[in-house]
Length: 474
Image 1 (cartoon, rainbow, N blue to C red):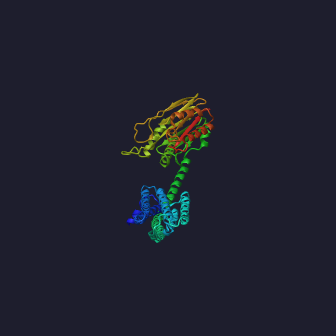
Image 2: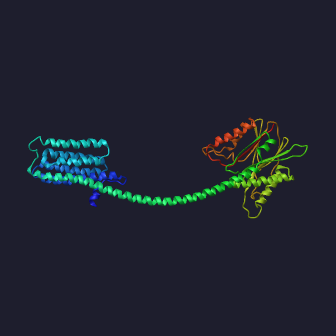
Image 3: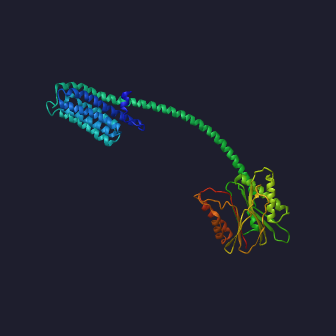
C-alpha cells in the first residue's frame, strides 16, 4: 500500500484513468532511478570517482521526476524521465563499454515514450532520440579498445543491466495490466449501479406514463366539457348578422382569454307597429374569466333577456337595478353571512332613432364627435356583489348627430401588457387608437383595431378577456 501511495503522488481527483496510469509509471521510474543509481554509484566511487558522481547525479534526477509530478508539472516530469534515461544509458554505454550492456536499457525507454505521451510532437522526437542513442552506443564500441571508464569490476554490471531491461518492461506492463483490471472492475461496478438505476428509472417511467395517460384522459374530458360550454355560450351570444341588421355601421372585437369568456355582449330589439324599433345592446365584464366567468356571463345574459322580454321595465337604469336585484337573489348574496361578491361591470344602451339612452355599472362610454372625445363615466357600483348597499344607476341621454361614433368596452383591453410584459396598453393609447380609426370605414376600423392590439401584445400571453363594441351614426 505504501508503494502504491508513493506511485500516486501528484494524482488529482479529476484525472481520468489513462492520466493516472502515466503519473504512476513516471513516479515509479523516478524512484527506480534513485535507488538503482545509488546502488551503482556507491561501489563506483571505490574505483572511479567520476563514475560515482555521475551515478549520484542520475539518482537525484529520479527525485526531480517525482518532485515535478508533485508540483503538477506532468509533462516536465516525463521529459526529465525520458531524457535522463537516454543520457544515463548512453553515457554508461560509451564510457564503460559493451560489457556493461546499458544500451539495452534503451528498449524499455522507447516503450516508456509510447506509454508516457499521447501527442506526436513528443512521441516522434523522443522515440528517435532513443533510437539514435542506441546506435550511437553501438558505434562507440569501435572507437577505442578499452572504454575510458572501464574497470574489470564493471563487468559485474552486464547481467544486472540486462536483467533490469526485462524488469522495466515487466514493471511497465504489470502496472498497466493491474490498473487496467482495476479500471475494468470499477467500470463493471458502475455499470451494475447504472443498470440498477436504469431499472428504477424504467419503473418510474412506466408509473409516470400511466399517470400521464390518466391526466391526458382527464384533460381531454375537461377540454371536451369546455368546448361544449363554448357551444352553449356561443348560442347565447347574439349573431353578428342580427346586430348588423339594426346597426349596420358597427363592429365587435371579441377576444376571450381562454376558450370560454367572462366578457359577453348582448343585443335585443323591441318592435311595435308604425314605430321605429327600440334597440337594446350591452357589453359586460363578469368576475373572473374562463369557466367561472362564462357561468356568470350566461347567468347575466339570460337574466337580462328575461327582464327586457317581460316588457315591464324600459329604461336602462331601471333595468340595471332589476338585474342587480335578481343576480344577488340567484347567488344568495342578500342572505346574512354570505361572502360571495361575484358580479359584473356592465353598460346597457337603448338606441331609439338617434336618441341614445344608457346606464352604466363601472364602464365608460366614449363618444367621438368632430374629432373630439366626449367621455361619459359609469356609476361606481357593479351588478351583483353583496358588498354594496342602496345602489343607484343614473340614466344618461345623448342626441346623436351624423358621423358620431361611440365605443363601449371591457377593461381587458386597457390592462393588456406589451410583448415585453412591462407596460399596460392604458386608457391614453386606447383613446388615441379609437380617435385614429374613427375616421376609417367600419370594416377597416375592425381590422386596424385588431392588428394594433396583436402587435402590442406580441408573443406575450393575453392578460384578460377583451371586448369592444363600436357604433357609427350615418
